[in-house]
Amino acid sequence: MRLSVAHGNRSIRGVVFPVVAASEPLVGYPVVCLVDFETRPLCDRRSDKRSEDAAMTNRPVRVLHVDDDPAMTRLTAQLLARHGIEVTPLHDPTAAVERIAAENFRIVIVDLQMPKLDGFELLERIKRADGGTAVIVLTGVVKQASVIRSLHEGATACFFKPLTDAAGLVDCIADINKSFDRWRETLRQLTQLRAGGDASSAAFLKFAASTR
Image (cartoon, rainbow, N blue to C red; front, top):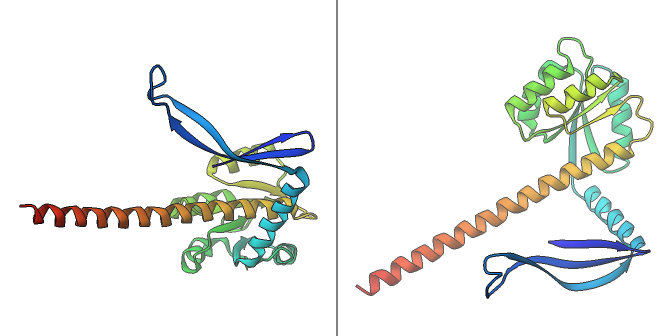
């Protein structure tokens, strides 16, 4: 795990890992060690952020936008396309859950006020079908109650129309995508560990059989 500490106009970075003390009275108590320190100007951290954003644009990021207003989905698609995010519009909210499953969308933007099915009901259905789907609310309903209910129903974030600046939405999608990447890496490590464990078990059984 990396540690970054700001000091003046510079930052200090190092690796943090737990160590268990070897003698009394600290036996069993975790001690934090910091190693591999380096100092870097804070402006370098902004360069890292730009690099991460560039990396995101090099990966296919797909988003489903559910809104009954074609002009709104078109505007959102244009704004997000500048950041390498591909937006698929859907103007019928009743078809959203099926479309998400069929095309494996992991990020969905939803409006709240729509005919046939309002955004809160759609949000509930999406989460019921797959709790891992990230839902972002983009609405013209500027009310505290709507924001709180969206959060309660499981929305990742809430943005308001008109969407004149997409920076916040882009950052939100990037954060969600990074979170998915971390989970993919965890699953990859789990697969490797399980494979290693199976190999160790097989080697032990072979050794045990040879010693009989």
